[in-house]
Length: 184
Length: 184
DNA sequence: AAAAAATGTCACATATTTGAGAAATTAGTC
DNA sequence: GACTAATTTCTCAAATATGTGACATTTTTT
Image 1 (cartoon, rainbow over the protein chains, first blue to last red):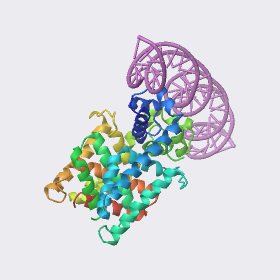
Image 2: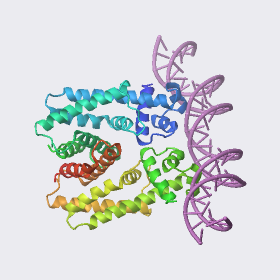
Image 3: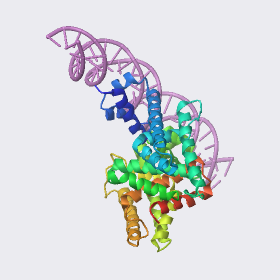
Image 4: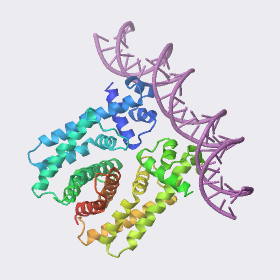
């Protein structure tokens, strides 16, 4: 009996990323448990979503943190951040989606929001740094570059899941398009 | 009384693009009509979604067709296609999403699928042509470039709706990042 | 202003989703 | 093999979402 709770959360992130109001049965099916089991771990829908949020936050922060620690060169850091986003897959996409939905109440007291902001700040420092050094186009704003970053991650995750692009080329393509796309 | 039916379809595309299983009440609210009125125009949920599909197909095909007709230069055509995608907004995003969902039964007899395929073929011809001429990187596959294209469109549409990026810069940024990102 | 058309209100029947209890079953452990 | 914990199965009640009829109200047309 491997961690059922985690399996449910993982499935929920996949399902909800695709269809936020999907019935819980879909989540249970994907996790290969009964709805009854799901309810033993999670009181209700919002409880499950909160668990997803927490999981995504932890996973994404860790991956981004590791990416930042992997090097002192901001360019190298940026590349690793992109790969981290891709590796997080739906966890990254859904995390971003939830924090940019209309109707989302941003609250810095909230741990999820705080970590999201922290991630964004780190990213922004790197971009500004690279722009200073003339490595990233100064025509572009960091806001656009962030949107673009997320767009590339989502495209890569989708390409992976549909299987239209060979897995071993994915990250290479993603970095090629992202780095050139911001003027590197 | 301006075209209520169209207003409902437009709202549905916005709502369903964000949350496919959202209750119809949300659609009605966004269209500023009652659920009862919505049901006068659309028999049920699937009828409404079919209407959305038809609308997206018409709108996207027209926009892409116009883009292709605007020039004979494939590079210029590609640029106009990107702008067309951005102008279609959620209509383009949702159209693409629906045809790439897991569980989507692709059927060339189906008009929506046929048009989607036609769009894809046109796009592919242009990419291959540009690759032949050495204007687009041959490292990248046309499948990746298509995913990337859609990713850039989605990012641009999202940037527009969140208002984080100035409207007049949007298309410029989008084309900069896309064109550089495929090696132009 | 009257007729026609469109929309809203309210009420109701159905269908689906949700959440939880109790007993049976399964899986892992000693 | 007996014991324990996790899961399934079956159940059911409550909540939510869906679709429709009857009639009032508003808007548009003539």
